Amino acid sequence: MYEPFNPPTRLLLGSGPSNADPRVLRAMSAPLIGQFDPEFTRLMDRVMALSRLTFRTENRRSFPVSGSSRSGLEAVMASLIEDGNRVVVGNFGRFGDLFCEIGRRCGATVESVDVEWGRIVEPDAIRASLRRQPAKLVAIVHADTSTGILQPLEEIARVCREYDALLVVDAVLSLGGCEVSADAWGLDACVAGLQKCLGGPSGMAPLTYNERVEAALRRRRGSPRTNYLDLLQLQDYWGPDRLNHHTAPTSMVYALHEALRIVEDEGLEAGWARHRRVNDALVAGLEAMGLELFGDRRHKAPMITLVRVPANVGEAAVRRQLLDEHGIEIMAAFGPLLGSVWRIGLMGYNARPENVLRLLAALEHVLAANGFDPPPRAGVRAAAAHLEARPRELQAAPR
Image 1 (tube, one colour):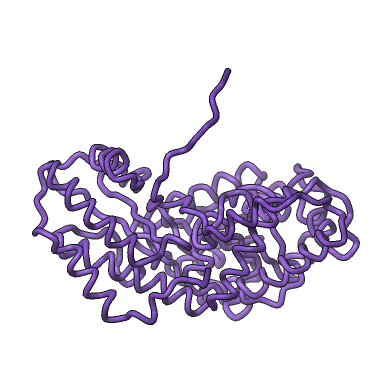
Image 2 (cartoon, one colour; image 1 turned 90 degrees about the vertical axis):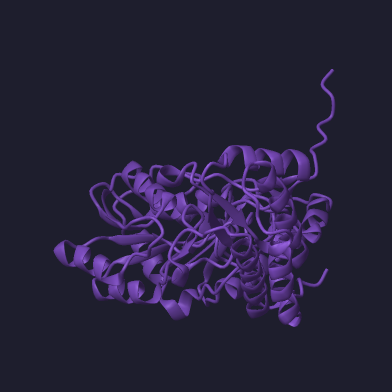
C-alpha cells in the first residue's frame, strides 16, 4: 500500500512558485460543477472581466489558457507564427532564450538581440534589427527571474508599431507585482501565470491580446500545428458561444477567479507598493549583512532579488541548510550565473514583512555556519527599520 502524501510546510521564497494565498486554496476546494453549467459560464465572464482589470486593458480577448504559464506563451507564439516568419527576441536572460526556442520550434527564423545578463535591451537595438529586415513579431520578457531585471517596454512598443511588428510580452513574473499596462504601453499580446505575484498554484495562464493580434490570427494561411493551444479555438471557447474545445480544469478556474479578486480587493497600485516596499526592505537587510546584489540596480525587478554568493561559501550548501533547518526555499541560478548567485523572491501572498525578517534571521544563521559572518542581527535591524518607516504601504491584501 502506498501511504498518503503529506508535504512538508515550506516558505517558498525562490523564483516561483510562491505559496498560494489561503483564499485561493479555499476556493479550489469548492464543489465541482459542469463546464457548461450556467453558473460556471457566469464565472468565466467574471474571470475575463477581472483579467482586463489586472492587465489594464479593454481587450475583448482576455482569458486564461488551461496549463502552466508556458502554455500561454506557446499558444500566442504557435498561433501567430507561420513557417519562415521572422521573429526578433529581446534577450536578456533565460526566458529570452525560451522565446527563441519556441519561435524556432514554430518554424520561425529567429534573431536574438542579446545583452549581457543583468542589463536591459535598449529600444535602439530592436529598431536596428527591424530596420535591417522586417519581422512579424518581437518577443520580450518584462521581468526575468533568471536575472532579476525589469525591462522597460513602452519605447520598444513604439518601435514595434513604427515597423509594423507585433509585440508579445512575457509578464509571468510581473503581473500583480508591478505595473503592467497593456493598453497604455501598446502591448499587442501579454501572457502571465498564476504561481508568482498572483498568489496561486501553477496551472492557469491568463493572457490578453488586441485586435491587431486577432487580425493576424485570421490572416494565417493554415491552421497552427496545435489544437490545444490554438488561440482562435480558445477564444471561441471563452467567447459568447462557448464552443466546446477542452474540458476546463474547474478548480483551477476557481483559483484564478479568487486570485484576481484578491488583486481587485487590495487595489493594483497598493499591491505594487507592497511588493516594492518589502523587496526594498529585503535589499536593505542583505546589504547590511555585507552581501552584494547582482544586476543593474536602476532596472531591478521589485519582486525578485539576485544575491552574489560570498567567496568561499558553498552556494548549494546554504540553500540546503535553509531548507532543512528553517523550511525556507530559495533558488539557484541558470546559465552563466549558476553557482554564483541566489535568487530570492517575495511574490504575491509571500510579499509580507514577516517573511523578510524570517528569511534574514535564518540566512544570518546559515551563512555564519558556512564561513561568512554577517554583523549580528544587522540584516533584521535594517529591514525592520525600513518596514517601520512605511507601515501603511505594507499592509497585505484583505483576507
